[in-house]
Image (cartoon, rainbow, N blue to C red; front, side, top):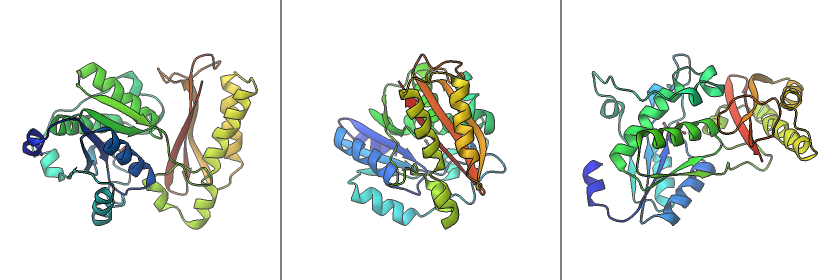
Length: 268
Ligand code: PAF
């Protein structure tokens, strides 16, 4: 990949993925394709961002389908390393994000963002993109990467891309594939809860505690859903807000059966 990169000229757009592609990924690919001379993706299910009891082994893998889809989007390259290439025996250097990674997903998934930041830094070093594309569905991941790019001085632009949703509002995610038909029917409750918060905010509600209670109440009414966390936080620092008087990130993580789903909206 490094040799290939040296042969490329002009701007390079990179879409980092773990495969199991859906319309959200394809939207990132289209942006990368339309905004750069060279467009590519990485496809690597990164073991260091999964906890010991998480779904690394079960994570959906269908490389043939993914490669066909990347090709249909007209990408010029797919960087698809194996685990030994990314983490050779004796690997012992990690990127440890700071406070931004401690709350929300970081509180529920210790070391998750250390694994994400490490692999993304390595992907950036190998592919040296001009621009890289990240979905807003993983809002905290996006902030961790933006902070890392600023702190470590990567010479590239991080481009946030809005969440792509199914017709019933469910945010597209590779993990939606785990849902049974009954669970799938319950899953739009995340979007419903966020929509209620947006409506309350637009009607003038600014009390963070009230908005968090609204999230809890809406999710609580769905028998198949179990709350991991709900949050109404400062969209920059991710600290919980008493009152929403700065741009707010409303986010939540909910288990439906054994599948953990996340979603968010921004209030401005
Ligand atoms: O969002 C993902 O799919 C992954 O966290 C990423 C950014 C590809 C790093 O493994």
